[in-house]
Structures are given as C-alpha cells and as structure tokens.
Image (tube, rainbow over all chains, first blue to last red; front, side, top):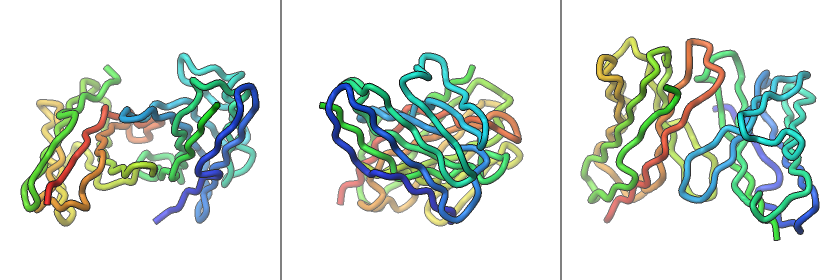
Length: 116
Length: 113
C-alpha cells in the first residue's frame, strides 16, 4: 500500500522556539495533504488542508500564523509550529491523498511534539 | 450535521468474542465510510471501508454493516484477538470527491486473553 512518512517521529523543544515537521508521500504523488492534531485519548482534529502549490485552507479556530503549512511539491508538506508553547504539545498526524477521492487518503505515523 | 457519533467509548471483549462498534451520522451527503485502527503512538491505518450502495462488506474477520435508512454503520470484529487491542475510529467523507474525513470520537478496544 501507499506509504506516508513523517519526520521527526518525536521532538522536544523549549517554549518560544519553532518546530518543523515534514510529511512525505514515498511512493505516490499527493495532490492534497492534511494535517491533524490529536490529544491523548481523543479523536483526530483536522487542522488544515493543503494542495500542492497553493495556500493551505485552515479549519475554524486554527491559527494560520502559528501553524505554517507549506506544500511545495507533490510529495512533501511541512508544518511549522511557530513560537511553540506547552499547550501546543500534541500528536501531529499528516495524511496524503493520491487522487480526488477519500479512499486514496493515507496517514503518516505521527509526530509527538513536547514543548517544555 | 457534520458530526459522526461513535459508541461505545471503550470496550472489553474476551478472546474469541465479537467486538461491535457503532457509528451514526446525520449528513446524508456522506458517501464513504471507513474504519481506522490506531495503535498507541502510531498513525491511523485504514481497516475497511464501505459506500452506501451496499449494506455489508466483509474482509477477513472484519465486517462493516451499513444501514442507510437509519444512518448508522457498525464494525464487527469476529474472533477478536489480543492483537486487535487498539483504538478504532469510524469516519465519513462528504461526497464522491470528499475533501475531508469527519472522524468519530474513537473506541478503545481491549481484548482479554
């Protein structure tokens, strides 16, 4: 099946610093990528949808200046958490969609962010 | 209308038993209903999915039952095994060319050996 990778798998940073998380589709081209946030024992919350070469569409309540998303190529999207604070500590999961239909969406393994 | 309601929140099943997780939705425009399995510290993995033109889909020990009139769908795990212990999420996508998956709250399944 299609493989989506994320890097790093976990990161610890100090409050006030910025952290970049990469999401790559390894064996397919992803026209659309999604970024989710998941708190412990909770569901996935969609943060934003990005299409290659265009600006990301953020969900209501997600600060676009804090969570910068770049989808520069058909295989790479990045999420940068700027000026991270302890409340940003969470599990961030990306997914990539190979086509236009939902059943071609594949999830990455997630990145655990801990802000001290 | 965009919500997908999932129950139960947690479930304990004996090895060899049947695990049943239920989901309900309101938006009749949803036409793709997947189930995902997630292990701790991992991303969700697609388990099985169904479209509303069929009432049941079976893949190995996993079966989705779909009731279009009741706007409900469920996951049945037959002969549940300890390795099935995970969190299960139902989801729904809007339209044939759905842009977003709407997730249920999740069910923590524990299979006791």
